[in-house]
Length: 368
Image (cartoon, rainbow, N blue to C red):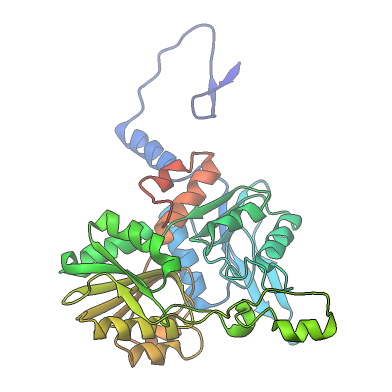
């Protein structure tokens, strides 16, 4: 008869015990290597035809000891995207690595994440996107540094929100020789918790910029000049009296914390429109900071961001490769990249093997 072994393999078993030759050391080493990588039947596809996007998928596959699945992704003349899988996936675990344009499986940067709150009468786009993904049949989502952690509640499936902070902290310690003379900076009160988390683990001071340099919403969006004046409402509804509210005004710019003669390290989750970062850098320079770094997980760096960074007081912008940004790096040598394929590949391996994901969140701050 045959029974299952400790690792799920069928082993021969008879009532009359028969001695067997012990396995060679070479065979044991091979078995151990196989156990440390993955079980069989794992295929990784990268749906992004962008070369930089495929590079991230290739790095993840190499760390897992597998080759990228054979797939063709291209656009037809009518701009419709066509995907052709060129190998069998029957009975296998399939992981699809994609950034922004297609939403399936492993999404290092979750798109529309800034649209996770209602603005006036608009929809909550992130919630709509989450609903669409679940309806499409997604059973598990791996992402990294969601703009708001509450976004996980929009899904009715497991969501593993990985963190890039260990890799960014490592970069600070290894690539900034005199980082002990640094101060972690939040460019607005909204990012103060992230800055505090970084500062505590590096045992550094913290500074917070408050005022015009923060990433303020426009008057039309945040309702700064609403509700309408009482006299206008009363003219239409004489019996209706609404208390007059004072419109919001930008407070004078202040820096809480000492940055004089120090390295300033601004931390955030997304760097896209860089105006607020450039303004923050100028403020820090005026306050005596002699070197300024910007650290963020997702480097969207859209529009004219590379030129603005190159011409600014910022010495270096460090982002991860959750989003391809090779073109931006060619335009601005100040942009540096930290590879996070290691944690994504380990997450895929653990899900594929049915292992716990808690290891990936050891020593991770809730406010990262």
